[in-house]
Image (cartoon, rainbow, N blue to C red; front, side, top):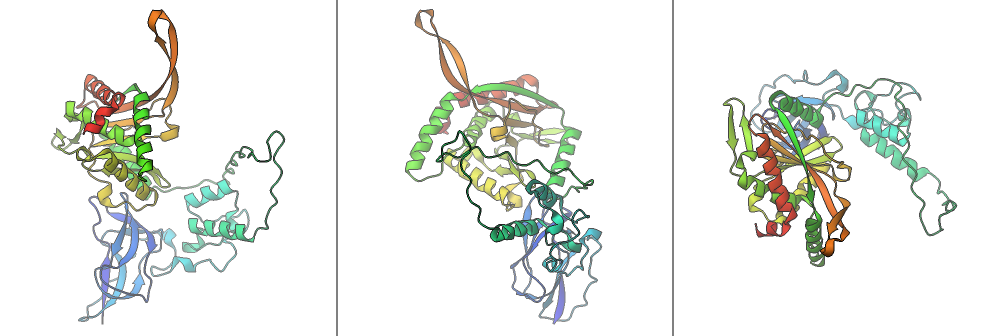
Length: 435
């Protein structure tokens, strides 16, 4: 039998390292070729790495939460075949904070203890875990630690909460407060304010947050932005969407959000101004106008803003666009996006949903040259002069659209005319069904 060292392969253009999210095998396991062995989060996506060979796991290299370098050893296998001289185990890429030995099991540390420190003392924990504990009002020193060097992980906190809920005695439902009928729920109390920090927290930029930071710096370094904002009457769009969703509901199909309509309206803008569906080539100092429309959509996740990409929008129906947006948004929230879901965008749409506000200055995602920000739909009273000069009031819906463009290649009047083309399509939405 021989030993084979499997090294972290190239898993994306420009990717030089990844954070080990979860080991799917352990020492002693017999595995087969192409069996998933580890989940690694890069600055672009979380990917599952398969084994290139069949064999027995001798050891895994790196704890969950540690950083692995591309071409650094991930796994040592015992394989059938001619004896091979084993290469030295590469552990220099693991940060000191990883603590435990390279082949350690993170679940084996600290579980026997009731906690990982005295109340009020210094507790090792990830920033996300600390924030969750503050919001829940939980003392981390009471939580069992399973991470490297006794670090409390998010899973530890959730396990502690679940066990505490199971062991808590049943509580009697209090009577409804004065002024509320017994069959009517009182307003939920506001969430508790986070406890003040006992000490400074150092939050390293890793994974998705590091990617966001790099992207923002790149945009700031290259793009000369300008922003244009205009309102859009969505009364007709809402009415059309309501009718379509009623029909889809009867057929047991998924309803449509506003985003597929916005995607179709952008196509109308690109038809008149194709230079907005383009990428800037910095090396050649040339604008590359793209024939395919690949729209990026921003999705908020626990790790930060993720932009997934719906490919070839021009050749998809409203329902196909909607299904793809739903699928990718769900994968983003679950951390299951693939690299193919994140690259190749030619224009980006960002929406804050119910927190949309009045307007914003969205940041162009370099090397793209434009981005559209979608804001909250609100009702307004619109004065209308009727026959005989009488003024009547009707209720209309409106939302603001914020656009930012790279002023190096997109002039102000072009950007404004592009947005008015998009607005025109949204205000006469029946035409969107013809594509």
